[in-house]
Image (cartoon, rainbow, N blue to C red; front, side):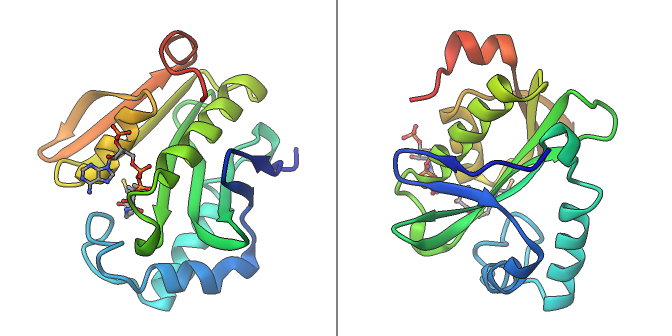
Length: 175
Ligand SMILES: CC(C)(COP(=O)(O)OP(=O)(O)OC[C@H]1O[C@@H](n2cnc3c(N)ncnc32)[C@H](O)[C@@H]1OP(=O)(O)O)[C@@H](O)C(=O)NCCC(=O)NCCS
């Protein structure tokens, strides 16, 4: 299955490609963007390693899982993803990372809602989950805003959130 292009109220999500590496590397040079991801700006080789994994073992194109670059008004804003979960083929790991100048404008939640709607209506996904850290208030609030709830703290300061397809249908219909 080829990942589709998805159109939202303001955002267009299109499948990430190897030639987006410059954009990802540039995004990862901002230490604030990376503060709760790795704690520091990433080097180019860190980014190559990250995206080799994301476009390789973390994707499952046959199941429709992978990563998208989101743009509004023709400008790339960040990436959103439905990553593969090794232990559960019907689960997807929601992730997102946006350029700092686009924070707090509703884009993080908009892209996340688009991917939840895609996962639960177009794919065989029955559970979407995300991991973050206690200190990442922006990520926690965004996950909650789109209907995920905290389900676990697998280690001190590490939080797991999730929503099932039936919960999403009941409580978080796409806007
Ligand atoms: C997490 C991230 C994607 C959020 O994107 P965003 O576009 O700023 O989020 P939105 O504007 O859509 O806001 C979504 C909700 O979170 C809240 N929120 C966002 N940032 C917040 C912050 N710093 N403090 C408190 N609330 C915040 C918003 O108020 C909104 O809540 P509401 O719908 O209840 O009003 C963005 O901060 C980011 O890219 N961070 C760096 C990378 C990262 O940490 N990714 C997650 C790794 S787990």
